Length: 257
Picture 1 (cartoon, one colour):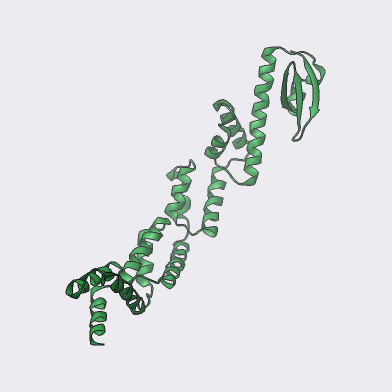
Picture 2 (cartoon, rainbow, N blue to C red):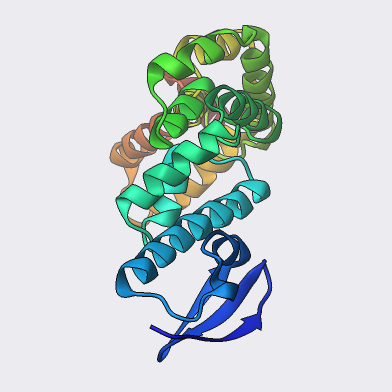
């Protein structure tokens, strides 16, 4: 196979014409195999050259990928698997680890810190996401457990306060249930959520009760009347999270008025 014209490209690569094939080779490859001094190569050497070039390409691509954001081994593997064989990918990952670019402890600490500082998520969500990135619970758990509980309590308290202040249509019972559900989905520990909810001050819901009553009454009065209407309205208000005593008191006041 005859080596023909070299054309300089970006990223330390050359476009090289070999017989009727054009390949893009890194200058490291050209130097290693002394291609500038060689005019002919055989099929075996050509295969060796291209395989070595693929390994370099996978390594340099991975480095560029890592510089944008810290990555896990699993992310690197997934990033490379569409273009390279398993052997090349595993050798690339080993090289990155040996060079200090893939450090589990550093990644875990940085990831957890970023999640705490930049996102409203709890420990369970962070653990779940890290497991999906290829880490084991044994690797994750000690770092999560080392975080002061006050950090999680503070996040939960802010979220609970925000949800209380933004509530427009739920009774306090339903609001508490919804807050607990939403914060559990965000990955916070249930016992922490319950403690903050228990110690939080919930607003008087009489204005919301009246507003919801008017909406429900106007809708159901087209379908029911008399005692059945009263019963259906009470059921709907109960489902909205208002307790029986406040519903009964409201309806009695409404009747007296």
